[in-house]
Image 1 (cartoon, rainbow, N blue to C red):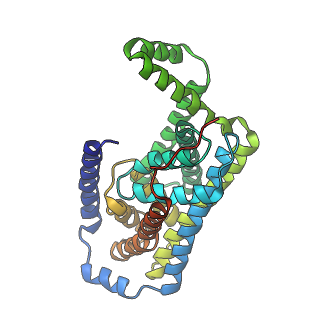
Image 2 (image 1 turned 120 degrees about the vertical axis):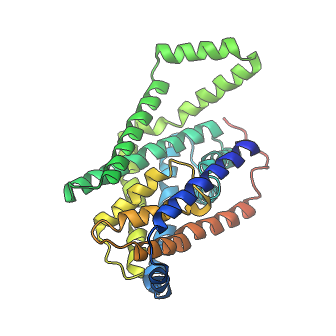
Image 3 (image 1 turned 30 degrees about the horizontal axis):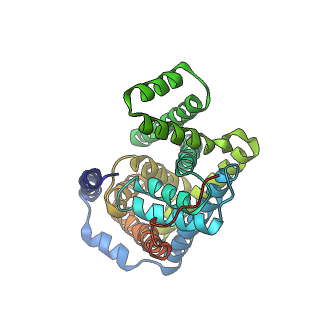
Length: 327
């Protein structure tokens, strides 16, 4: 992203975050919410922190499996890059994907475009888990609120759209050929050669989809990975004395994941709070304690990601390093 686009994206995210924050604070008893925060239970809060850290480890492990057919990349490098990318996303939404692709591309024998394609594969599996858990929610509670059902159907659309995009890239077609001819005709020769080369290299990043065993392992790790976040959500609710159920925690998570397809404010303020107040108030008509739980989540999950990501970035020296030659 250019600085101008980053600025506009950040401003839009802050505006949306403030709107979501206002919606989650409407009619709330501030005193009751502060009392809930004052009595946070230490053990569940620390367990939520641990679940968040475990999420990042499984995320790096899953990424190493997706990149396996392309080239072996050290798990420690992927773990660090995952933290850096997540921290960047928590500042400027969707900026972290490009950043971690560049980091891995510079420090490994994998083209950045192929790494970016592998991140696209990650997103497909993420939304597949959303769809799977949305199906579980429908089984447990067929009478879901309209906003939860809408979030689930958006996730289904994202999976279908992503799979169509990948298939259209991998399979020869008239559209793909016409796009290639358009690039050749409209762009300068050097630029068109560069773009076609990047597209060719990016296709390597989808190699994992050609192996059934990798697809199964990636999906299972995706379930494990996001179970950590669902667990963290549940633990944050428990830490403020809120009797959250499994379906409530999953609902919060579904709303958070789908909500983050929109621009969001730094640390996902507003998006997280609205997801908690909507998801945890399914059975109880109460928003003060769910809002307090969202604050615990921000402090125990999102802020540690930003701190650890910043530390990893400083230790890595950024992306201004001599790239390794790509074979």
